[in-house]
Image (tube, rainbow, N blue to C red; front, side):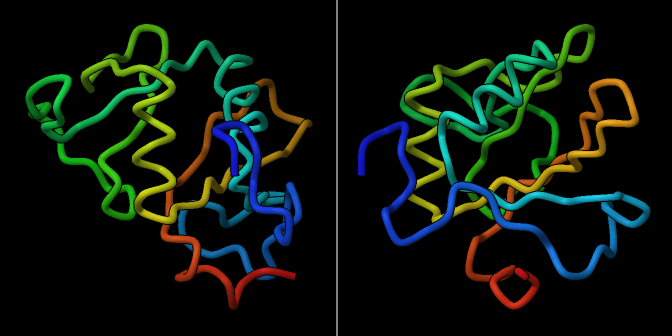
Length: 128
């Protein structure tokens, strides 16, 4: 698997069957491990890769991170609570922790930024 591809046996995007928690009310929540799609989602929102944990590139942020154990998040314009990191470091953590990116793809709202980083296996039963 290259840094911008998902495994061949995984579809690029999968829909979620049930929408509880942070995605309640979403018209469509999307589940993906595709690096290019995640980076496009972030770029559209001017979100930059970040971490809340200590890594070889720097110390931990003061903010608590709820991300399936990967220590990765995004900083958005005007809200930079986490330490910026490179896309390479972000995706290394994402893949190492077998995470998936789940986001609300409701196009009726301007650039909805609701997302979660989850352990992919923890959500497999919710996929349609």
